[in-house]
Amino acid sequence: MNGAVRVEGLGKRYGRKWALQDATFDIPAGRVCGLVGANGAGKTTLLRMLAGLGRPTTGSALVDGETPADEVDFLRRVGYLAQEVPLYQRWDAEDHLRMGAALNPHWDDAVARTRLIALDIPLDQRVGTMSGGQRAQVALALALGKRPRILLLDEPVAALDPLARKDFLSTLSEAVADGDLTVLLSTHLVSDLERVCDHLVVLEAAHTVLAEEVDRVLEDHRLLTADRRDIRELERDHTVLRVEQTPRQTSVWVRLSGPLYDPAWRSEELGLEEIVLAYLERSRRRSGRPELQEVIA
Amino acid sequence: MSWLLWRQHRRQGGFALGVLAAFGVLLWITGVDMAHTYRAALADCTASRTCGELQLFQGWGPLFNLVNFTALVPVLVGVFWGATVVGRELEAGTNRLVWTQSVTRSQWLRSKIALLLISSTAVGAAVAALVTWWSRTSNSLHQNRFDGLPFDIQGVAPIGYTLFAAALGLACGVLWRRTLPAIATTLGVFFVVRLVVESWVRPHYRTPVTSLGALGSGHVGTPGSWVLSTAIQVHGRTLAGGRITLPEACAGAATRQASADCLTKAGYAEVTKYQPAGRYWTFQLTELAIFLVLAAVLAVVAVVALKRQDA
Image (spheres, rainbow over the protein chains, first blue to last red):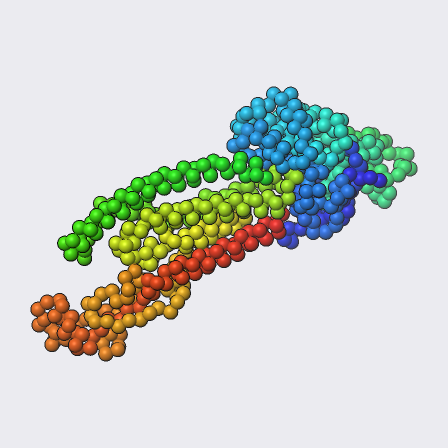
């Protein structure tokens, strides 16, 4: 399997606290992969390590076949957009494009420039006076002009209004359609995932808990309902994410690891958003804040 | 990389050049004028044998102050260039932008440091050269270039200070990753190190010369020497405090000179510890060497710290 991004047992410790632990997944080339997890689940740490900005404490990563390192041969393959969208505030977009041209051997000026012009972004306006959406577009154009093989985006749309978000994501989709590009993007906005992603990685409390194609994810995750019953048998064969018990009914959000034998369960498909939410809620419960329903159960 | 450096720092460079040019013109005009005045006055007083009480440049206080203020040039370089050249990027997160272009961190850092050190050397050397040239008149007039402040702003020592301040600012910027605390630390450490070296280290570059002379003989060493201390001895014992209670025999002396002669006869003598004028360049070069070594250490600290840090 020619994984564009292969991560094995990757971990990062700051002082005594593990920011990321034992992350293992594999993203095939040409995919757009969403990376989700609660705040502090290690998304930023993971992306920084993949971009060669931080060194892992444990484990290893291969990005486009190379170990992330401070070397030109690695750096030219990877585009990275940090969460706070760092740009030189006093420069205009034109200056940023020139910087891209000066610092990248495979710079494609047309790619970056036409994108910005098509989006009506003034090339001669200081970046510091632009809107958040425009800044994000400039940063994305800079990352795409580099012609990377892997693009790492850390919550690129979190601060944008819905329209700017839509623009950003369609720019991204076009870029993926245009060429041989693999994208890994972290986000809180699950609805965006459904729009652009065909692969999903879920981080929970510094661990990977799910790394799968979106189609498989949708297939495997179900909401099961039945008259009130015991779920121990279900837990033995499958991964139970969330349980809701009422006096008469039991509802279970579950990841199936095989066929479901008990005919009493009514099975319903789940949306991506509900699945992700179930994971996020589970990680919150595990981090020591029991919720009411668990106490009752 | 060179385009990036040019785009980022051209404004600072232009500003520095402008200020330097204005300062140069001012010193050139006044320097030439001072030399003329001094030569004319010297010719006059030699004719009338009154050179002992030559009073020149009485109203020039502000200009002398301005020249003395060049003692602060190194710390300005350290604060405005050293502390910001990398520190501001770390603060704004733009290092993550640059380090994910196809340029390695080491390449980036090398060119940043090279630019910082070259421009600091240039500024330090230019200011020191101007001040040294301008001060030649007042050096001959006062014979004081070995004393504290004139020593600090002339010759090659200021180049060492400037490079030290630049490297200090750089290291503080890397370690703090924020500009403001880096600036504060640069200021504090710079002044402490300069003070310690000037007060406690510099006097010992060579063993001072001690000379014994008659009371009131004033400057014992050759003119232009750096006097470290003077004290009064009675039969080889140093008097504490330095105030003399006149012995009764000398109390009745009519003039200053008479009482001084009387005291000399009574065994009083003036002891002067000083560094002779001929050691000036030895001291300048020693001072330069010390601060260059400090600058090199700080630059290495900055590089190592930045390479170890995660972005």
